[in-house]
Image (cartoon, rainbow, N blue to C red; front, top):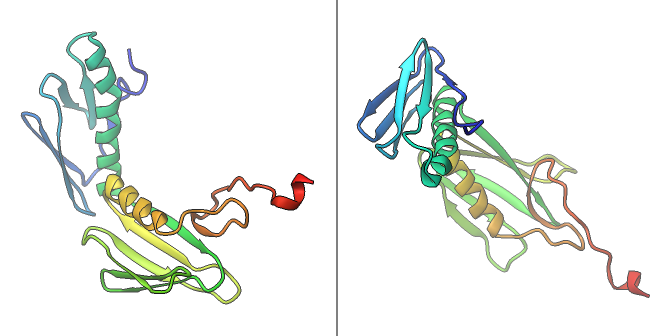
Length: 183
């Protein structure tokens, strides 16, 4: 039995879960999320917990069991507390500003990059003197926030020699030695 799949999901107060066939809708203080899941799986809500049960021991059902439980848990956690990720812009002259839903990045290219952020995501940029600019991305949808962060990071990948680029705050970068180390 899947260790993750058989763990029950605790439903906090203020979170509503509606199961309609294969469509699961989770409503909370931060927003509403919906996901289509396989109709073979049975979802049971009892005593403030949600459990996911698989119908058979088929390889496909085993593979999806833990996945569905994790996705539903992320939805419940997202609408209740939300998610937050911080990106750090490391490089000389790198800047970030947010105006409404437009993120403007200056990443050492000949032009500034303007990126539209989805309405479900809230972005803020802060720059302190002597420190790298930090872009904070917040949302109730874990998948969407990961997608937005991946898109921002792809604009300037981390360079292994000097460590310049866009990284998560606290991320450890594997650095390489330069040409002089080869002698």
